[in-house]
Length: 374
Figure 1 (cartoon, rainbow, N blue to C red):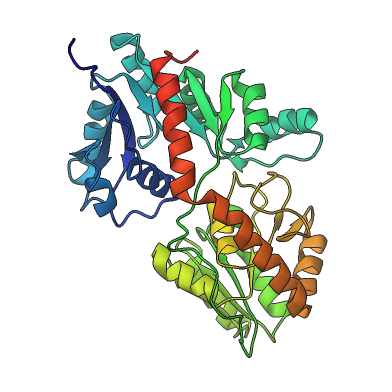
Figure 2 (cartoon, rainbow, N blue to C red):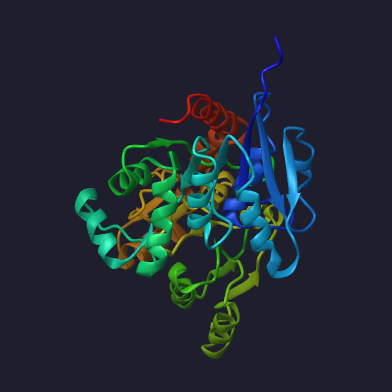
């Protein structure tokens, strides 16, 4: 009998070595670890691709065209024959390309991931009623919300990265969800060998410096705690503005040094004492997992029910700004509490190493593709 041909799966994500977008980092972590001979993966890149992805013989890469032409090449990538598309995205008109692809390849499966909630104020109200507490979406207008909805509605199956997102997704897109966690690289993100001996405490955050991340809240924390050093790692349109504002207001204990590589970020976390996430609208902020893996207690908001933090176990889960400020003040004041929570967080995150998590994704995807996806 002839050998069974491997199922061919398109992954329209950027697998460049220098691309640190969270979704693309997730795609690189997964594809570099997929080994099943029954699956073949096809990804894209613009610049030099990630070495760990190149090293996987199961992955075939397509280089996108330079300049603005990359969009056209990505759309053509979507329209290649394949058994499935995993992790759709990458182009603004993905919903249109998926619709065209469905007409050309009616048997091709689309497997999407839900990593956060985006929508209008009306969408938030709809989800809050079903959830029982306030739900906050990354705000987008009706046109973009319609495009996002079309991508998810066209998917045959959606993998949510938390139970909360699966519950919300079923309300919006129907009963076609499963849940798998995101992993972290514990060879990079691991706790320090020795306890912090900082003369001045270091509080850190990380993420895009955009308004919805609420970096001004971080600035206010630095103003309220002049005895503590505050650092936010990340790029964004507000970076220069925040740096200038801190200087103008005489807040000398805060810096915005820009984006770091994962290795550099992990080193910065190990030198810190506390991680805080001022944003109220997230999916499962992977950076909170990475900070916890580096032994940091984490303070975040509960609106998105992130599984990375268990309240008073490895950090604090709060529901308003006064609680946020109080939790941070409490942790700044207690070395013992910080150490105990950080230690427990590192233990919890050890089970989320990508080497343990990626095979779960691979088995699930193999089952979905081979079963035809209900």
